[in-house]
Length: 261
Image: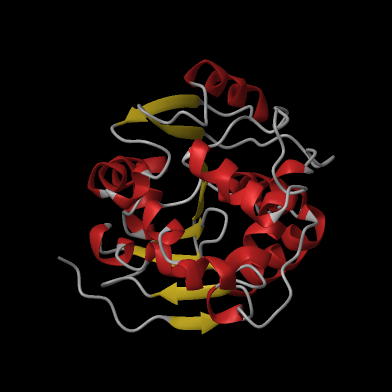
C-alpha cells in the first residue's frame, strides 16, 4: 500500500493527495450527485505511486457545504478549469462517475479549448451526453424525488436510511438532479484524447446498449469496460483502480521522452 500525506486544499474546487514518490501524472476525479472529494480518499493509496489524485468539491459539497450549489454546467466548468490550470503539472487525466462523468467531459472540452486538453478521459456509470433523462425527478416534491432515486438505485442505500443526512442533503441532491436533468452538451470542441467508459454489469440506470454513443465524443480511441456491480460499482474499487493503473502513463518524464523518440 502506498502511504500518502494528508490531503491539502487547492483553490476552492480541489483537494489534493500528493503522489507517493515522484509525481508523474495527475488524476482529477469528479464524484457523483451528492458526493464530494471524500469519495476518492482511499483511491490515493490504491493507485500507482506516481499518481497525484485531485478530488473535486462542487459548491454545496464536502468542505464547501455552506456554499449554495450550482445548477449551470457552464459556470461549474469554467471555474473548475481555472483551478485545474493553476495546479497543472505534467500529464492530466480526468475521471468522473455518473453526474461527475458529464462534469469531467465538459471540463475536458473546456481545457481542450484552452489548449490544455487531458491525456485521457474516463467516465463511468453515465449515459452519453446527448441522451436526455426520460423521467426527470428534480421537479418532484421531496418524497417523490427520494422515491424515484431509490427506485433507480441512484443514491446509496446507507444514505437513504439516514433521515437526518437525507434532510441535510436534500437541497444539494435537488440541485445536482437539476444540473443533470437540464444538462445540454455545450458547444466546445470535440475531444482528441482516448475515451474509456466504465459501466456496472448490473446498473439498471445506464443501459449498456447506449454506452457506444460515447464514441462520438472524441476523435481518440474509444473503449467500453464492464465491471461487476450496480450503479455504485466504484465503491468496490479494486478492479476499477487496476483498470485505471493500466491506462495511466506513470513513467518518469525522462523515460517517457526516451520511449517517444
